[in-house]
Length: 369
Image (cartoon, rainbow, N blue to C red):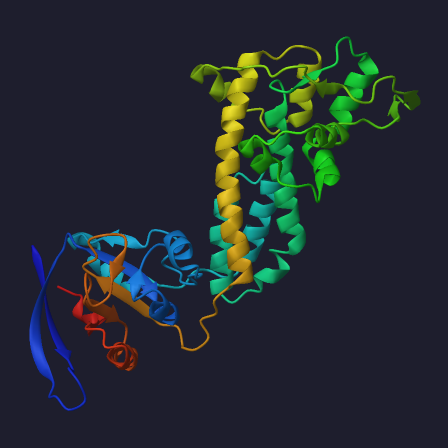
């Protein structure tokens, strides 16, 4: 069957009689799955529906809808239409916060390169009624910013900062022990945004003093229960001139595997075991990662500071029918909406009449062959 025939009864306004109209929907069209919490946002988006990231960027509003978070657009096929109709709109809320916390814990070890996943799970957790402010804390935001600074500081290595020659074994042990990601993060909290400084190319003596202080070893370290006084506490110094570094794309896949082992990278660098080509590849990967992390951090902070609560209505499922593009305006590109029962159908009719949006409301039961 190429078409599904829908018989729709809809009310033009309170003074008009009910009329019946026959609607045809192509099975190859698209359903956009959402729920009634989106109604709180629509008046602020000019009744335009989009993916959550687009909504955040375009309107600085935070969507709190299940469907907008993953695979919102579902292509209808005749074989699975009944399954789509019957499929539950609920997301399992039993472990969403633990999953979110696990992703945060893992993110802290991989430079928060999974911040996009953290953002989406944060929105999910909030939508399901969890208090995300106990998870997305100011301390976490600061930790993400410190992590950005740690990796941004590596952009100055080889170009402007080089290792001291002939470092002894105790200094090398100190590098491996004290220049880990977690150790450096603790020393870099509260520093200005080094990535923005790098991009602006506003380099100064103060900047290099700052980086030098980050990569300064303690006076003493303990090796095999013996206390050792270090003869060199600053194993990396400012180069007299900038090195121009290049790389080959073939090296990128090898660098990706060790990018988070900062102590290992710096120890090898101090031993003169890393080439300028390696640093060129590392810088490219770092810049790509930092761009994505900074963008998602802005979104995460915006979410935390401007979270939108959908408390004004009871949640019920909504399908937007015949969506031919990922961003659509109700009453314009999309004029057909389905929901689960007559009570919610009437609620939707009243809502769209209030805002003079021309949309027809049908029931899920009408979406059957």
